[in-house]
Structure formats: C-alpha cells, structure tokens
Length: 377
Image (cartoon, rainbow, N blue to C red; front, side, top):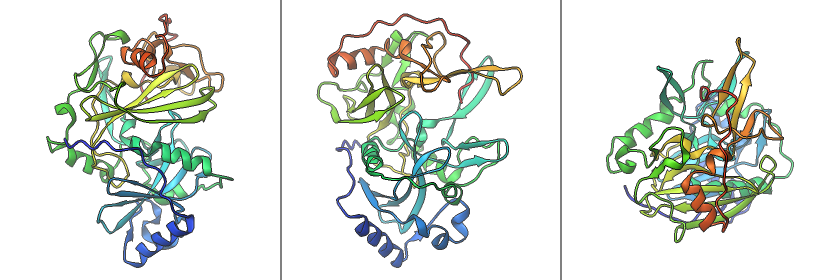
C-alpha cells in the first residue's frame, strides 16, 4: 500500500464569492451534478440553492461546502465532491455524528416507523449462535485529515438555517429494513479490496484482544502502533457539552506510517476514533475506499449507548460498551454511559495518557454491568 502521510487540511484561502464563482464555472464547462436522491431528475433546479461557500483539498479531491444547515435530527454541510479529472460533482451530506466524528451519510430511511441516516457498509457477528448484521459506521467516517477543517467551518457559522429537504434531495431513500448502503457507496470499496497492494495488513486485524472481555489483553500488530514520540501530525481542540468542555484532538501516525489514529481527550475521558489508512483512494462519497481492520472494542467512545429499550415488548437492553464495563450515565444523555472503565485499561490509552498528555495511567475498577451486552445498533 502506498503511504501518503500529509499535514491536516485547512479551508482554502478564498472568499465565499470566489468559491461560488469557481463552482459556477465548472457547471458552465459541462461538469455534471450527480445526486442520488430525488434531485436526480432535475439537479440544476433542485440543487441551485446549495452553491458552496468554502472548499477543502485533500490529495486530488476538492470538497466544496455550503454553510451549515440543520434539520430536527442533524447539523450538516451540503458538500460537493470533485475527484481528480472526473467531470462530475457529487452532492453529499456531511454531518457530525454523536461520536463527534464528521461522516458522509450513505443513504437515509424515513417513514411512519423509521427515521435514520445510513452508516455505510455492513459487518456481521455471531451473537448467541445467531448471525447479526449491523452498520460498519466507520466506513462513513470522513478522512481524519479534514476533520479539523470541518470543525473550523462549523465554528464560523452564524445563524444556522433549517433545511428539511436537503437529505431527501441528495441521498437515496431506502425502505424501512435497508441497513446497508447501496452499490454506489459499496462498489468502489469492493474494487479497492480486490487489489492486494491496497489492503492493510493483508486484511488481518491490526488490533485484537487475546482474552475476551479483558481490555489489558489488547495487542497491536508490530509497526501499526501509534508513534507517540515522532508521529503526532496534528494537535487541535474544540468544545463539547457532552464531555464537559474543551476537547483536544491528536492525529497520530503509526510507526510504519501505514495507518493513522485520532485520539480524543476531554477533561475526564480519552478514547480512540477508528483508525484510517494513509492511502489516497477517496470515493465519490468523500471517504476512504480502504478500511483498517481492527477489533471494534478498541474504539469505544467516551460515552456510548447503554440503556433499556422499552419501545419493544418485552423491553431489552441495548449496549455498545463491553459487558461489565458500563460506568455512570451521562448527565446530558441518560441513554449513554461512561465507557472509561474499559477504555482506561487499554494499554495504548495508558501510553497516550503518559507519553502525550503527561498523566499517570488511571486505575479503573471493573463495574458490574446492569445487563448483558445487547445488539449493536
């Protein structure tokens, strides 16, 4: 796999008028708008209101972005992805997930019974002898190199207008039971995986646990460990009410420079965003085509779902925290509990606290879970 370690992107130094003019000139030169949603019948008319104000570059991809908008569910940019020499402009929805990571929505579902944003490809796991499919949410994570640029543009926003139509105009609508993304999202990723030269660690997990349910048993494959001494590529910060104030962000490359990590550090909690490859292969959704295989319990957010779902009969527990490690609920969101009892026992987090934050490793006492680990959603 080709290694491409680059500085984090910043918004292009151009006025909103200049960015809008550049975008208009592309359309005049014959570039085609390619929405996946209802606007595909007449994109020039349906998407005229979504002309960009900002631009961000990464490799040969330019991301054009409107100002921030919102609907009752999410705050988002309407983004236009222009790749290399392609004469296409792909409108997408870039939104900030409750995990505090910016993502590119793959599709959406909206009906009397369901209302949610699609989170990419599927992965399966065996739970109680049954195969369960769920979203591989990290497949929609936007490149780590542009996360801070999106944060900066969010901070520039003044009054945020409401827009209840952008999602359906831009994204493909699925039926109630459609969890996985459609072919325009999945096919480029499948083709990339067919090239062994692009696959990370020959498709094997770079991080795994040798003992189930024991965070101290985490093993990271040699070379793929974060380089805390010489590999910090970015230090940035933002604010989070959920995490109680200032949130520091550290983008750190691995020792072999093939993958990169984003460590989040709040006033009390530390966690790791799913790692990404340092590859250049960006799809029309603005995300990387190649994944970094790892045990998902490496990347449990500081607060994660752990609650009794009484909307079903009988009520059932839903948890995304490893069994036995759920801490107190969030003061702002009682459906989310503190996952630090698990996270702070990860050896890589202890090293991060010691070598980057200059803190002593925190001792955590294993908590008795209120319920078994539920189906991941």
